[in-house]
Length: 379
Ligand code: CUA
Image 1: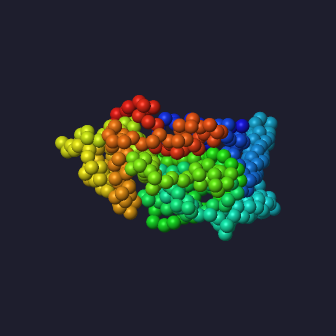
Image 2: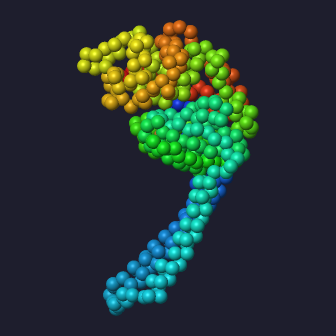
Image 3: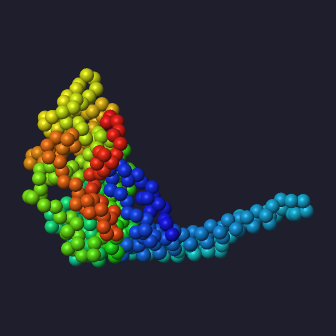
């Protein structure tokens, strides 16, 4: 039966430049739970159900007794009102101590699960996770980088996580794993994926007006070779505009569409060479100088209609090198029809021939093209 989280994933608008959610048929969750795809899921689910049933039994017993007493001892003609006793030591000890055992049981069960989730096994591979308003970056041991997460079945993985700005939270319902990303320090978590497939990853800590967009897919592959093939990108062989598209996907697509449709920030199609209005009579034509300023110092000028101060991350040379800036410039210019155009995504061209279409579409994380989406107001 479909569960609520999957339902939620299905109702998201896939036309907003986001990675589309996996199709419903990929999921086998129960009425209560999302699909069970990690070694943590059974522990979490069974503890949840234990607490649920104990609560239900106590609820029925307490409310049942209350209703019974209200009826039995209600004041009515011909019924003598007795003064109730104010105290019964044996009863009070019983109803304190017996539930106490249940609470200890919950605690031991919960603590066991918690320790399992905290103790990272020695054979785990390490993936670096960067959360930022409003997207994710994943750095693999072999140097690959993606904005959707690629794992290998039965390969335990440690996540070393940092935030570039505010609190975020890394949540994969199918794995029953959630961990906050805290600015200024690293946080850690791990999972052991037990099932191939495509799952959903959410930010579950409110982090700004794009919080609800901060989600992506997790694809669990059958082997390391499959995973490497899915995450590999050859920077050396890429044309500047293609490398620029890749940088855009990694760094910018969380807040900007490659179309005219605005997101947290303005859509970036058809802006090059056009005049930007910053309010108060300040206007400027988009050129190399403005492009550089808007990335290195986003607060210098904010397009009118967008919030001040800018929500945009400041990208120093450590974040986007000058070489990468040149690639990105080529791509942004291409969105205005200038210079060479980026190659369409290989996976998208193949038309998603296999059943894992949604993850393949992940490579198209920079969203639909201008033709696919109606031009909106640019802000
Ligand atoms: Cu990041 Cu909510």
